[in-house]
Length: 191
Ligand code: AMP
Figure (tube, rainbow, N blue to C red):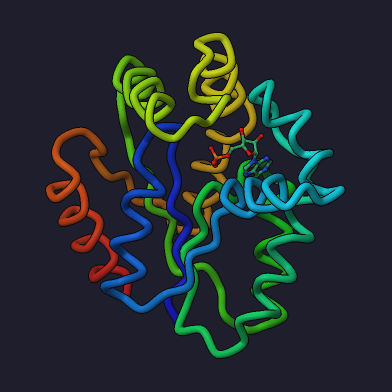
């Protein structure tokens, strides 16, 4: 099994690269942001509750996203492995993920962290907002808040995975193709 945490701030290119990685390596893509947007589109109770946080660029409570990931893992018992995109985002989430995977005897193989300059992140998010219609990509103050929340709550996970010898930094500037090649080299060196 190959279980990868694709890490990085909002706008780092996690979703774009995850789509390519799952195709090449035959993995299941688990994006908590996509799952939450799906819940919202379906107007479920969970989706409507999550919207309050997403619209402000705040994190949805740990218990909600951990529960979602737990059920997705259970729903894919035959997977070759998973790409976690946008999850974990807090130390509590990372610990819960280790516990869930520990029960299945299939630990995280590595954490690949896309590194992108802040100015580029903001430009990419604003650009995406024009085509995706995502409210949280169209408001500069929400974008700034998402980046601050990342720096405060999520960036510490670099230390968490470094302590396990699993952290790999990937230069996330440049063409989609060049970044994908760097990711593939790092993945191939993991197993
Ligand atoms: P994303 O698509 O990953 O940028 O996520 C969009 C929004 O969904 C975030 O700004 C959060 O409000 C929420 N979200 C996604 N993943 C998580 C997570 N792992 N923990 C908490 N909130 C999340």
